[in-house]
View (cartoon, rainbow, N blue to C red):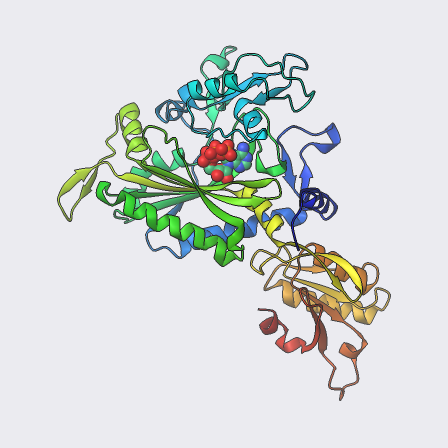
Length: 463
Ligand code: ATP
């Protein structure tokens, strides 16, 4: 199916109708930049995390996991540079006072602003195009001066004074700082040697000025990050290796190569050695999905300076001491979720009807199998179906459904991407000597084709 401008609306509508994504605090009129994952959304999100963890930790012999605190010592964010420099360029419309990101207003008019441009460069670019830029709310062209707005979210955790605002702790703006500050602990406890990596999945918070594009840009979001600690002379080699691995990961998941591309950062932050983004062809165009960055020794050096703790590594092979360099892969869970919804959304015709079908790869499908009694009002069918459900649910995420007719139940499962539906009918209960006794119909999501399978072979078949 060709994706078009209305694909986004369709995905948003399906996500609400079928319980993937709800607007955050909806009964209170919503809360900007906040979304909740519903019953199928949480399954999909968990599956995305499990696939990432398997690929990054389970299958890598020198990568280990971590779950660090969301709120850390405030000095972490001074050392990382976030307190001083983690900001977005904010402009306010002089007419309706809507706040926008200056770089996004430029982007809306196809004027390219690199997200790593300096404040001065963005100011200049903005000023030279003021006559073209329009407020997304009221359409006027009259803006105030650009202000740098810090993205860190302040908290009073552990600070009980009235002036906590002057000495706040921060909700983490990225998960990787928790990895850097534990690098020594992991080194001393996990029998790892350079090169080794630490992977983490967790929430991050940013006071985004204008959250937009649905779950693409949230204020509370989740990151899946891996930091590889390498020797200074192998930094670029490892970087190339991880670039390749991360692109392959999406292809292995079933993404079409034509929907993915690399974007090289033209303006590197001063410490970075190289920075590439994997961009996905979202319904609103190619946008960053994941970053792969060679960060040099900047982060560990900063933490060494601010914490007064040595971050040096003794390389016993060469009897050499150095601060390791870092290669990072960083992807948003929510952006992966939206990319997965976009990539596998499909509409086709089946048995004369048009249907929506989410063609999720099996490992991502929220529900692996749905079990139906043919009729709801026949206790024998229902009892047998419940028995089959219990058998299957032991092995995989399953759903029991006896609502409405079977055709309707198929449509519903197609829309949530369930690869198989199993129906228990009168033949299942059949005569003792019937061939069909203790067999069920298994229907395939993609082809709609049905096969008769013995209950005894069902698990094997589904796997
Ligand atoms: P952008 O330029 O789109 O704001 P970024 O370059 O600031 O993103 P990073 O700091 O590199 O993003 O964060 C790594 C990953 O975290 C991104 O590739 C993205 O998938 C995810 N991410 C960052 N900010 C958000 C957000 N506000 N909402 C959802 N995911 C996000």
